[in-house]
Length: 285
Image 1 (cartoon, rainbow, N blue to C red):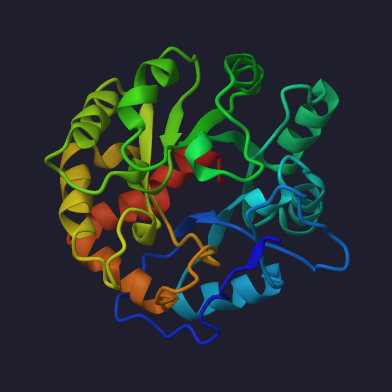
Image 2: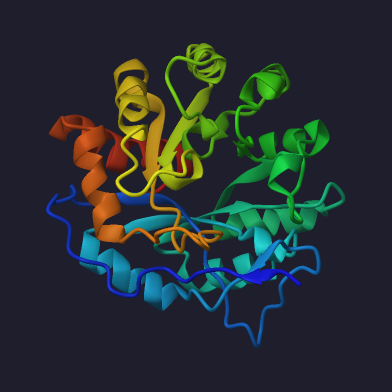
């Protein structure tokens, strides 16, 4: 049976850092109500409801305005929850879809109308019911102007870099591309990919790159190096509700926001990464 993942901290604190108006959380998941949406039989986790209203209340506390909803891996490639949520809240959300290779053009067009702007692939190391890299699916997404969001597992980025760069799409790498240090081959590959001008990185999910306790100090030099190297192609996200954190400390989202001040000390650069870059990547008004 899939395990029930630990819920997020229900009491987010107001961060010390005041975010610039219009800041976007570029990586969240939502789940439920469970009576309406079933988890995929091959999911590696289940979760209690993580509803839009709960997340929007969190945004109000920490100073965020909009978000990018990445369809939860727990649902596999069933897009019902994503479609329903974007239908209700498309004014403040964009979407990233997990799609089957045989998805119809009509379904892709519907997703585009609702605000989907990318498709997500993961590697086998992540398990679950997640789509694997597929060039034909990526080409169909590219025809609609969508990017490919890719989540490597551990140090796998060098194994997939050439396949990703052979795609016509813009490439967005999840959660620091799973890089855990600046002096390894994965980080060198990441810089090479950034230098093509077609690759973006999400400064999100530091807990996905290290087993350290918050505030994940080993991630700060990685974040600062990326900000120094290619700030025009970085975005930031909370990864709320932080699934798969059983037996670990659940971070408070106010604390995660305060990490931005450590990672991006310059105020003008913070505005670029939190406000301006998401407009370019996701087409926010």
